[in-house]
Length: 221
Image (cartoon, rainbow, N blue to C red; front, side, top):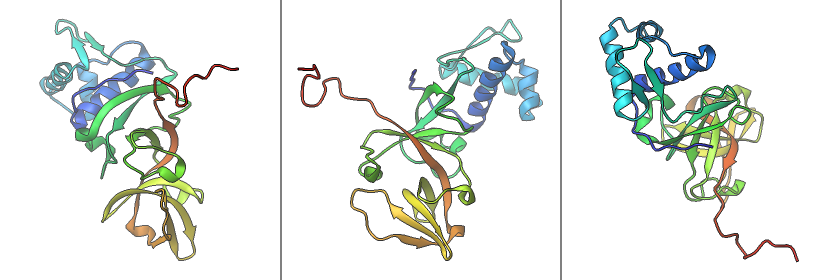
């Protein structure tokens, strides 16, 4: 697994970088400036070049201006079996692509783990997922999902007018029940499905274990 601590990208910069990575995996060579412009409806090659220069200045690319496809993507595993997944320091509100200010790293993981396009990691805070055994600082993997496709009991990140949070979701005849995932679970909250947006379903946990095992030596006796 590879990690990086990049500078934040704008939404269009992130989309261009993702397109370049996907294109390279498929074709084994980079898209031209003109092809990038066509993909995103940018008519000016100068504008595309400015986006590429910004990506280079932020440490994502190395460029050779003398060549049409003279770009090298840095810090990305281009294996067809892996995918680069963004990691946010807290739950974003609104579109994930617009949450560049919350991006703390990107993790390259097996596609079998991040099986759905649009997966992303969020760093857990405090006891917000303690009922699932998730600790402060752990990374949880979320995948996009439609509310109507959620099996009962799924753990989701959600957004309402009051903010974001986590809950186990159960669908009832009257609407939805949200059950707390904190260590001290209170009564379920009944909500109108129209008042909630599911940010993603929690599907995996990543935790870095301490260098020294708890309890001392693990040597068998």
